[in-house]
Amino acid sequence: MRRNAEELAKMRRAGRVVAEMHEATRAAIRPGVTTADLDRVARDVLDRRGAKSNFLNYHGFPAVICASPNDMIVHGIPGSYRLKEGDIISIDCGAIVEGYHGDAAYTAGVGEISPAARRLLEITERSLHAGIAVMSEGHRLFDIGLEVQKVAEGAGFSVVREYVGHAIGTAMHEEPQVPNYWPGRPGPKLKSGMVFAVEPMVNAGGAETVLLEDGWGVVTADGSLSAHFEHTIAITDEGPEIFTLAA
Ligand code: MG
Ligand code: MG
Image (cartoon, rainbow, N blue to C red):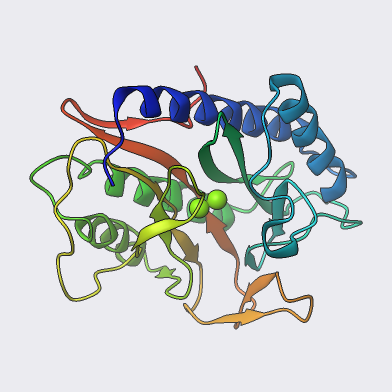
C-alpha cells in the first residue's frame, strides 16, 4: 500500500512519539530498575502526547512496551524483573496518532556490558541500517533482508527467522512481511509512499527460538544473547525516511 502526503505526515508524528518513548526509557535504564518501571515511563510519554498504544491489549498483551532482557529475543512482558549491571535489554514499543502507527525497538546495555555484548548491539543496529540503505525505488522488498543477513552473518551471528518486519500504516502489522534474511526470491518492487517496520533480531549463537510458557516471551534456544533494533521507514523519492528517529 502507498500512503499519501497527509497519511505520511500522521505516521511521521506517530514515529516522533515512539522516538520520545525510546529516549525516555533509555534514560531510565540503570541497575535496580524493573521492566515494569520502564513501561510506566513509556506510558507517561503516550499520555503527555495524547497518543494511544498499539501494544496494549494487542492479542491481550498487558503493557505498552515489550521488555526482553539478555537471551530473550522479543515480546517480554514488563514486570518484576530488575535490571542488573551487565544486562542487555531490548525495548520495543509503538504509538498511534490519528489512527496511524509507529513501531520501533532498540537494545541497550545496563551499566557496563561485556565487549561481546557491545559488539552484538553494534552489529545488529548496523544490520538494520544496511537494510534501510536499500529502501528506495529500484530495489525489491527482500533486498532489505539480504543486506541485514550479510551484516549479521558476516559478523558470525545468526538472524531469527520466525519473527519478521512488516508493512505498517492504519494497523501495526500489515502485509507484506519483511524477513531479515533472503527468502529465495526478490519480492515486490519498492515504491515511493510505502512504509515498513524493519526489525532485525540477531542472536550471538544459533537462530533457533523457544516460546516461553507465558505465551509471549521468546528466548534463544541455546541461551545466547539476542539484540533487536527496529525503525518505521517510508520510501520517498529522495530515498528512505526514518520516522522513528528523535527530532
Ligand atoms: Mg516493534
Ligand atoms: Mg514491528
